[in-house]
Image 1 (cartoon, rainbow over the protein chains, first blue to last red):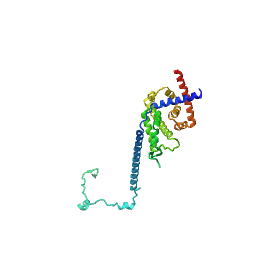
Image 2 (cartoon, rainbow over the protein chains, first blue to last red; image 1 turned 120 degrees about the vertical axis):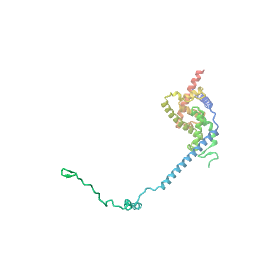
Image 3 (tube, rainbow over the protein chains, first blue to last red; image 1 turned 90 degrees about the horizontal axis):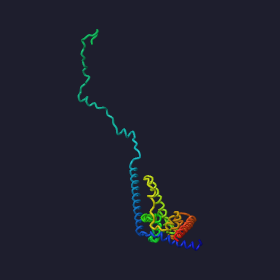
Image 4 (cartoon, rainbow over the protein chains, first blue to last red; image 1 turned 45 degrees about the vertical axis):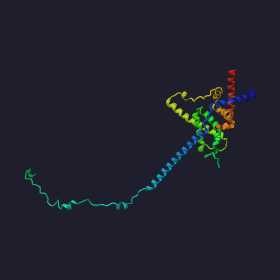
Length: 120
Length: 174
């Protein structure tokens, strides 16, 4: 195949292919596609802003709570003792009734029955 | 100082410049999605999101068209990687045959398209970019993420292969 024939084939090929590729080409309106893209970007930005705000609020809340809570609680022995007191067990019953339970000794009955030389 | 309609996070891109190449970019997105229009529109929207959010930043190191085509190409690759993973999982769990997951055929299924479709993916891409999207081989290589030398090799092989196939088709018809 000589060069001219090759170039002619190139040209016809180019034209045929262009027709073929463009046959289905009916592009949607630019404004519609571009505006949809802009809306998508805006929505994405709003969402990102919301996430960033929520994350910042969470961090601030955590910091505030962290600052308000003391690091650790140590109780000094003196402070602990100052809050405590000791009293003896109550003996309130004795003065009220005023009797001595050991005042009279009980008298036990004596046995009169002997058994093998000893009293039972 | 950016222009009035320049993008906030991509000051070197203007809305009007994007609008000017919108049709061509959609064509590229369409071919990246096996001619599924809904998927292509979604891909376009994602590409614009990348530009608007500044995730894909244009620094005038190439033409805007090359840059936006590259963004679409990268998004399509990511999309297919995700889809491939999902399909693999579905196949593993459902035990369905591969036929259920074949991509949709393009509407125009003529001889030329059949010849192009039978090319390896890289060759098909470079042919589409150069022949149909009016790019140079350098620009097409940048979009495909390959070196210019590799792009040129794919281009030459694709042309040679197409010439042969179309010549055979012509011979069969006459």
